Amino acid sequence: MKAVIMAGGKGTRLQPFTASFPKPLMPLGDMPVLELLLHQLRRAGVDEVYLAVNHLHHLIRAFCGDGSRFGLTINYSLEDSPLGTAGPLGGLLDKVGENFIVTNGDLLTTFDIAKLIATHSERGSDATICVYEREVKIDFGLIQVGPDMSLTGYLEKPMNKHLVSMGLYVLRRDAIAPHVQPGVHLDMPDLLMKLLNSGNKVHCHQQPESFWLDIGRPEDYATAQKMFEESRELFLPS
Image 1 (cartoon, rainbow, N blue to C red):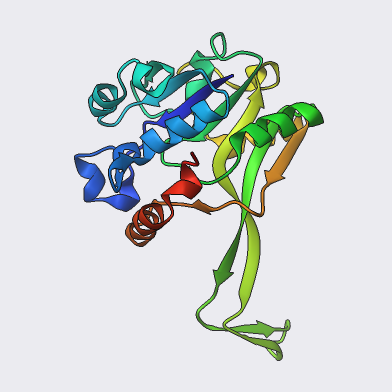
Image 2 (cartoon, one colour):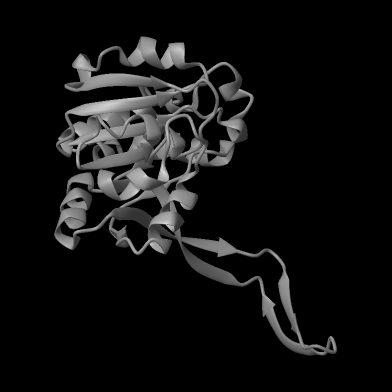
């Protein structure tokens, strides 16, 4: 199994940290988040990785090298300009195999990737999206009104639950081939909707027992550091 890691973003939400440091190399204790991800992919049976890089790519190359110290073969796909979260796939389709993993380079999760791969295969899916349930709280009283502005409801600081994309996918090469082109910008939500509108099998996969955190904001990054320090074995089981 091969994997494509999207590691070319500028991490603007984490500035000023990412002004001189690529977000995938942001440390969790003694280990960059990208290194953690590489170990998790190797554990799931991945043997070859393509890193789609752009911003400060020389630092990522210097750290990862050829991947041998992670038990992987690592290749690099350099974007001359930002291609979005799916655009780099256009130049890699002849290298990734029939089914392959796509993941963000800053993924922090305890998700069982091997189970994800098996589920994708069992379903015969063209695309599998990993999803996580998040609670979204509105910190205000939510007013509901009718057409004449008469009050119909009043919800005090409501809490809603939503399924969100984790930035981890399994894709079937032949299904996405008609929708991606080398050097053409494309984001993953657009690719997935193209697949859906073309009649392809697009499934979601949830593991309620797993943990996932978006480390794009400074406060979430601080939480991630604390969690990894206190529960390292959850992310890297022996």
